[in-house]
Amino acid sequence: MKKLLLLSAVMALFACSNQGRVDNSETTTLSLDTSALVQRVNDIYDATFKRYNVADSTTDTHEAPTAAADSLFCSQDWNDWTLKVRSADEAHAAEGMMGFFEADYWIMGQDWQDLSVSDVRVVSMTDSTAVAELNLHNCGNVTAVRLEMVNEGGLWKIDNFIDVTNNIDWKANMKEYINQESNQQ
Image (cartoon, rainbow, N blue to C red; front, side, top):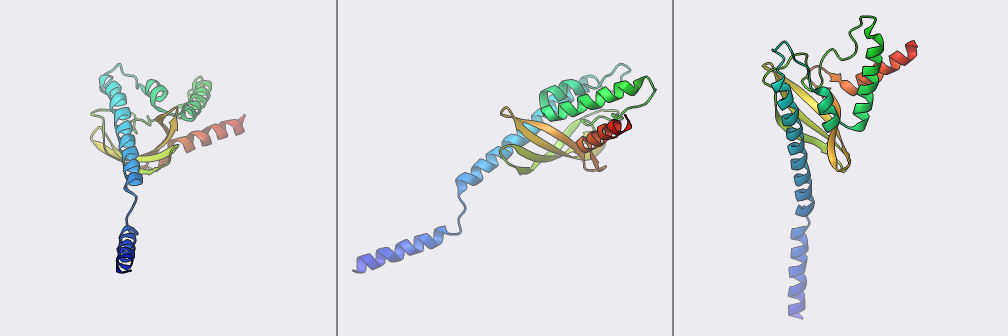
């Protein structure tokens, strides 16, 4: 009887000691997923900025490599919206209008030099969506950027660029621009 009572007491103590513990397997999986996403964002910007830095904006013959980066690293929805905007801009080009894209969302400006990102971190993440933030370095300036991302075909892709420093939500602005264009027609 004493052995049974002692065994019950040990089991009760063991049960109490495990109540405050977190399941480490779930935490480790989340940690690995966020680490992989941080690496993906760094890889995306490294590849993209390599193209920009080769075509440095200080030269006379430069063209931003946004289309190549968009097709590789942005979601289908993002690419659909940029196509709608570029089509609307082409329709107004003959009228001498500037168009929507007065700046470049990859570099948060018109000119670029010494591009890099730092302090990439995951703010939120599910199986299909994520939000990452980073500091974008360009021409000696630092801009806080938020990326809304989606998982398409097993790859994380950028679905929206938000310039936190200047309060510019690129996708929301594109949608508003297209809606205004539609209302004017």
